[in-house]
Image 1 (cartoon, rainbow, N blue to C red):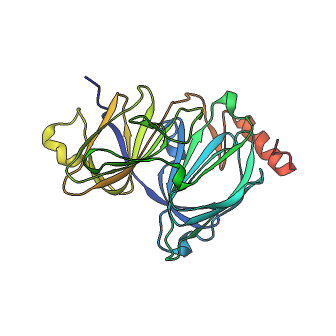
Image 2: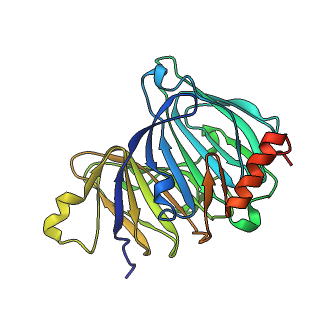
Image 3: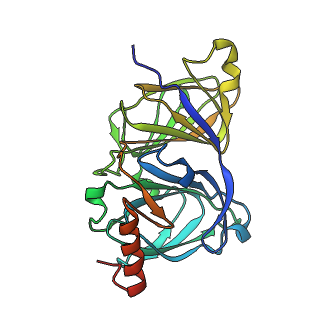
Length: 290
């Protein structure tokens, strides 16, 4: 029998202010290292108030990580030191490998009604790959497969494989899975996961009963977890999530842990404080971009 992943930790996202004054909800970040290894940070920037996001994230550097931006509604204008520029719109994803160094900006613009819905995830890079050449991928909504399973389960496959359908994001060092899953009411959903990988879910609509073999069945109702919550799982072979009278939509994300020291300051993540010092000195001297 496959081993169901039990719940390791549940976190409620918290308000933070980032960039030039963007109001976010942070699912996890600096204080949770190395709990989510290889992931470093998860931000929810959903808002109906343009004053909370229009100031954006002006030009800033990154080194040693990958940043993954997934937009549900609205537009985000971007540009970087590689010469890439454009707009990420509803359903699009930007997967940027900063590697040895990149300078970019992200400026949320919202949609015609002032709505801006999206998420940003930071993934770490192992020491041997921190100084690889930067790489940028801008994937449009139509490039991301959408599959429908029995009883109306809908899954957008950004990275990973579901029922033989492979997501367009491939050849990533941490071997990630990134799925956008919608479950109908009164449905019991199981999904296989790679043993040894870190797996978490972020609920973005409705609520789900995240099954947990360690918990008494009488406490099952206490496992219903709703919007803006992170569920981190223990190791195992699969997750089991059920719905009751309401649907549930969540992001399911996993990756292979790196297991190395993390030295983190602002937008740069290395393995040692000396490497951080060098990175910021190079940025100051104008030699950051390799």
